[in-house]
Length: 197
Image 1 (cartoon, rainbow, N blue to C red):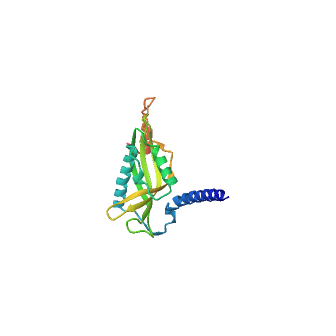
Image 2: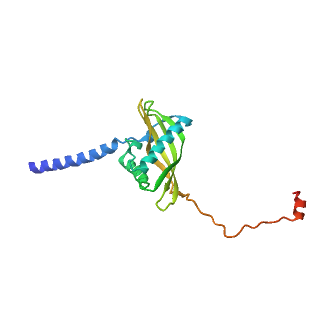
Image 3: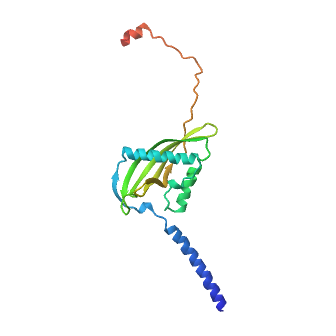
């Protein structure tokens, strides 16, 4: 009887430990949606310049297949990180990927953090992907961003992807004119009526 009790207690203990470890693992993930916005701002020219440089590095990391872990916020849930990785992983190995444009139309401060980690925003990123068949597709992505760091350096990192399109084909199209252009002569009567001399 004691052996069965010990086995039962051990099984329940293992099950309880497994459940607690799973909830604890997901419990450490930060929910950036719970942050309280304290101040809304417009992004300035130097903010846009820093963002452009950071996003050009990001596109280069995708192109060279270096991994994008440095560009993702480290304290979000693993499922969210995997969603971000999977979206951008689909562009690895393409013939070319080029940065086009980035803009942060929504920028704000949040409470509960220090001065180096208090900026959040929504960024629009446009980039072009060239396939092996020379098809060029332009993609637009809206991402939630957080500026994180310390006194030495702050970096903009991705919290999540809000929206992405399927891409727009912007490949060069050859236009051929099948017929010779017709020149139309105006009559003297038309020139007289409209005042064209």
